[in-house]
Length: 338
Image 1: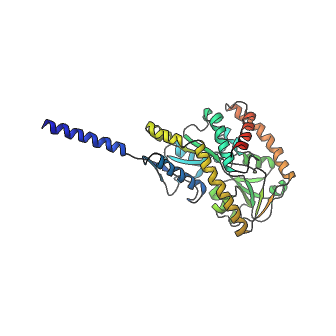
Image 2: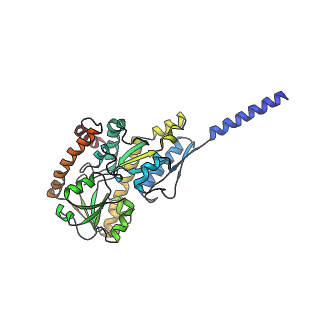
Image 3: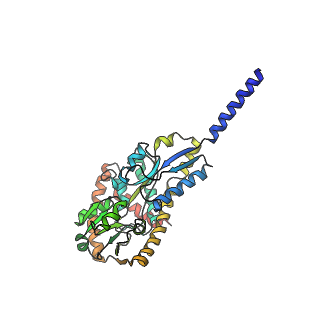
């Protein structure tokens, strides 16, 4: 009887260990843009990689609808309402200062280049300062170069822009618009269709991708700038308690898939949809594209020079050493990325 009891105990322990070995960690993931948007599909691609790299030990349950509006996403991840998501730093004005470096004009024409370079600068200079404290940062990235889109007439000059009303997403472009004297309203991307279709706004500042992603069929004109009029800083993040509860083995998988893996994944996705949307908008909607002339570019550059000086002072207060050198390093890094 004693032998049987010992055998039963051993079998029970073995079953418990097998159950523990087969236990699966499920992360709730959410997106505040449509499932077809490149942000959503890139997040799903990352989740698929996570499941594959962990041999099924970890997976994502992607919610059909975000439980909070875009500006509340950072706090939702921090507080555990969801485990994984992304947000735009500029959706909460004044909260993030150092990350504005990725939002300046004329940075580059590829989301991959700006995203990977930004991740490198972030890891080296910004992460140690803890500006995203409260979440586990999986990676940072940017979208493609920002463009002025309009419904009724082309924007050929700073004066043209000043005579119209635009929806913008926040960050440095908000400050630049103020400095330029433009009439802009800070609204999350998903609200663009209603604002434009009802005529509340004359146009919007977006990367190429957004014309298709948000079904902006009313857009007729696009004004581009060398390297973009602006960019947007994104953070892809995880609830820290969820991460801390993982085994060392599973933490290593998360870490392997973080940083530049995230930046390149999102950047490549954005470049693909930028190209497809640009071609589609020209063919289906007859969108007329012009490039800002030298006078328009100079008008922006003159105001941006002041904003970069102001940013450098604010970043230094936040603990960033020699911000102007960091900005120069960032621009040089963009040129290196292939």
